[in-house]
Image (spheres, rainbow, N blue to C red):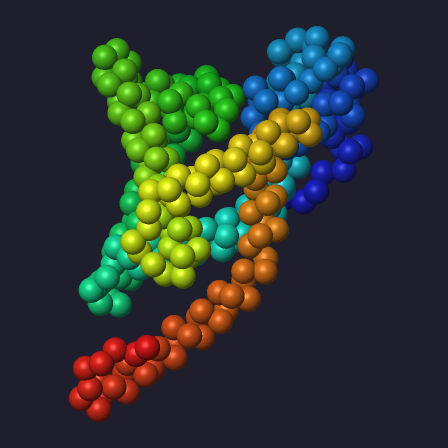
Length: 277
């Protein structure tokens, strides 16, 4: 495991040309969620005028702290992400899984998506790592921003018309995912606000859609205005803050689920067919 990198160690690892600008370089070079392009674009003054070779060496000097930041922060972030996302995901899955057994629900909503994610990360992620380790990508994948890594990886693998076709397909799939997720989220929000009523008018959907868009846009704008290289930071922080109190609700939901399953088992043993309330 990685340990925190003191500022003195970072300064000592810098090339001589970059040493006078250690304080200006350290923030971007040690950002676990950033990229080399983001590091360069965030520099100002004389530090921004350094050559690419010097900046590459300065970015490499922050690698230990980036690794430490990633390993210490990602578990908290994803924990909070899924807790904050659980009301939407839970209600959405409940609606599309009506009539399914618990076994079918677990297989279709837990194991199948996990295997798809595993295959995606193993095949495409493993290929990207191999391209970088072998030198075939020449640092293009590592240097790309997080939003562009998929397309840079594809560009390193294929070219010509096939690359154009797959790129267009990826963009369409990403847009479809965003639109369907937003539509499902608005539907779930309306269901919660209406006390479980599933027959919601279009006016309510439009209003909550505009509110959701405004909140997300405001958080992204706030993150950019605060000088952060990643405008998503404000959105991530809001999700982590909102997820903490919801952990208590999730605990009560787990207790309720256990009680419901236990009572269903008792009814089944007694020969009753009525489901648990």
